[in-house]
Image (cartoon, rainbow, N blue to C red):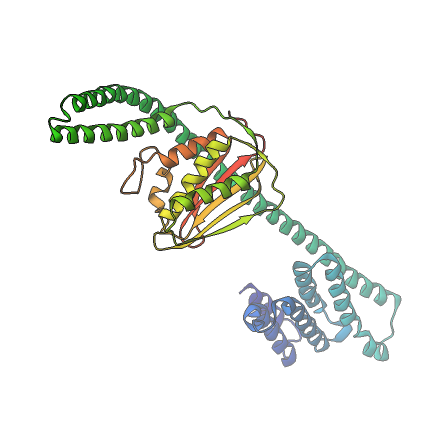
Amino acid sequence: MLWFVFLGALALLPPFFEIHKQLILLGIGIFQLFEPWLMRGVPLSRRGRYSIVLKILLGSLLIDHTGGINSSYYPIYYVPVVSAAMLFSGMETLVWTLLTSVAYCSFLIPAVVVYELTPDALTELAIRNLFFFLTAIVVNRFVTENRNQAMRYQRLAATLAKTNQRLEQAQAEARRSERLAALGQLSAGLAHEIRNPLGVIKGSAEMLNRHVGEANPLAAELSGYISSEVERLNALVGRFLDFARPMKLNRRPEDIVALLDRSITTVQKQKPDSKVIIERRYSEGLQPLPLDADLCAHIFDNLVANAIEAMPEGGKLRISAAPANSNGLEGVEVSVEDTGPGVAEDIREQIFNPFFTTKKTGVGLGLSIVSKMVDHHGGWIRLENGSEGGAFFRLFFPRDGTNS
């Protein structure tokens, strides 16, 4: 709208009854206002250049119909000059400004036939052209600096977003570690309190079986049930103690690819009827890492088994290992991604909590123990959205672990 106000003011100035001048000013206003719509059919890479050419032609028409080289409307050439300065680099801006200056100076050709070219006139012409270049340089410098500043702000915003994301992840992992520590202490106490009476129950059942087993088959059968259930509870108590017990890592340089392959083979032997296709994606040249092989076997066995169990009708399991950097630490990132039903967003943060499970059987300690083992290696484990909707576990093992 400001363009129409400005061009309308020019239209009221002499020569007022020059119809060509009024039409050209109207054309310039329409083009400026509807430029994006008028140029929509032009390829984006050429759109700016075509626009400036049209502005130079329209400006030249206005100059031609308002007195030629002596026209007071010569500042109309600032429109293509400023447009070029806003769109292009410094060198291309100077090229377009030179073309604009040549278009203006071309009106000298018919003028020298009618008028005498005096030194003062040449000086005036030179000053006008120099101001074209000065304006182009100043505007281009301002626009370039503003564009660079915007890019710096965008990079800073992206860096802050990543920093906030890492901070949120660190806070979530810290909260999870605190919960694990508290529940670990509680589990250790409960496990010891439960194990003692279990021993008494088992011993009593075995003694009962020895004394009345042959004489009373029903008592022998019931004592057998008691002993087997006590064994099952003892195994469960053992898992509680494994969760609560402080871990002492036996670190040695290990080939993480070999550990992954070993776990895959182990789980495949345990689940021979599985229809899951396993896809391995290992980067070449992975350096050995200081790992506890037994704990890593437990970690990978658990994740692979969970993934296969999530796809009873078959699917694809992708396991990858690649060099990675996390918070300045060099290491290896392992990912385990399946095409199963995945984990709902509202329970994803709880998946590593002790005693939380989505399975019909189990007590929910598997992933808690896995998380604890990864933490003791100085790394991290995260659950994210898979590319095909399944569960996507990412684990990071640093090259220089700090925990033991």
